[in-house]
Length: 122
Image (cartoon, rainbow, N blue to C red; front, side):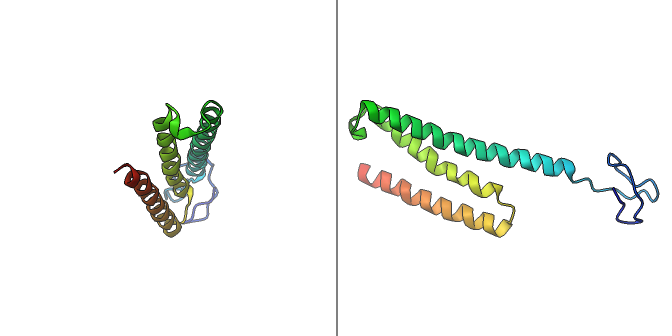
């Protein structure tokens, strides 16, 4: 790793330059932890979608009309969780403006869907 101050070559584990003492930036652990974070968020998102799909298929096998299912409230809750899980996706976007836009759009869509669920119940 080269020092940005004096361009001296240092070992990859060094925290400071051996020539001038300048603090060295080591981005490898941050990149690695960011990759793990992104992978974890995406796996949670995919897991939620797959679980909901499996539950819906099994529920439809036993109760073709899900409204009459004793697990109706579970199905509605799972749909809400899936809708909210879309909020995980913008967190893996690195561009701050796109991240904010994504969060706002998904939040608005979820609020609309939630209102559509609540209004018929009133």
